[in-house]
Each structure stands twice: as structure tokens, then as C-alpha cells.
Amino acid sequence: MSEPLDIDGHDDAPPAEKRGWTFDEAIQFVRGLETRLKDCCGCHFALGGSVLHSGESAKDLDIIVYPHWKPHNGGWDTTDVRLAISALLGYPLKSCTDKTSSAARGEPVYRDAKSVAWVRIKTGKHAGQRIDFFFLS
Image 1 (spheres, rainbow, N blue to C red):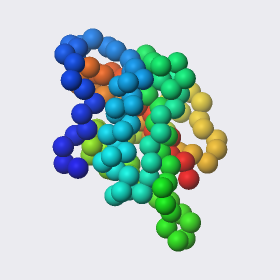
Image 2: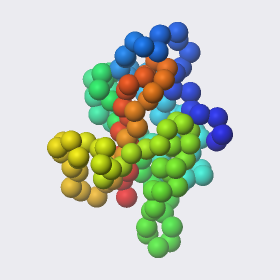
Image 3: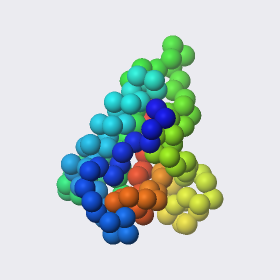
């Protein structure tokens, strides 16, 4: 888990060119998360949002994170998986309760059982693009 997840694929798009996510890129990325983290974190990763329904998104990539197994007490603490995702990406995840989040900018706050965290990619072909992680319990 020491190597960052390869979100840049193998094409030679210039880093300054802002691009969205395609379905094929998203599937590759989600499979990379699943392969590296499902056993150690006890969770699965699923694709959602515009990339799933339209085949692309210029805005963001929505990834749903849900437990594969839960401890006997029924709870699922997402702290470890959030830290593992941050380590793979090389960037910290920001919670929607952070002052820099969409909630602080007046955007909708989710009022159900999920928690949401996000990261903005800083380098490579997805520089400037956002990934939203929806943690289900």
C-alpha cells in the first residue's frame, strides 16, 4: 500500500489539460481501490453518478464505499478505510464537515445515513478533478 494508486493510466495527456472521467477510466480506478483495500478494510467500492449513468463526467467521480463485513457489534468505522484511501491517492480526504467543504460554500448537506468525503487530484491527467466518496453503513 506504499505506492500511490495509478490514477493517471498510461496515456500521455498533458497535466495542464483539464479532463473529466470516462467510464473506462473510472472502472480501472475503482477496480484498483477494490483490489488493494477490500481485504484490509473490509469494504467494497462501487461506481455511481454521471460516469455510471452517462459514461462520463466533467465534474467528478462518485464512488460508493460499503462494508463487506461488519464487526460483531454491528458498527463500521470508516476511519481506517478513509486513511487507506488517502494513503493510496497521496492526498488527504476532506470531510463534508470541513470548513473547506461544499457545505461551507452553501451547497447541499447530505441528511441521511451516509457520510461523504472528497479529494481533488493535483497532478496528472485528472489534475483539478474531484472524487467524491460516499460511505454507507
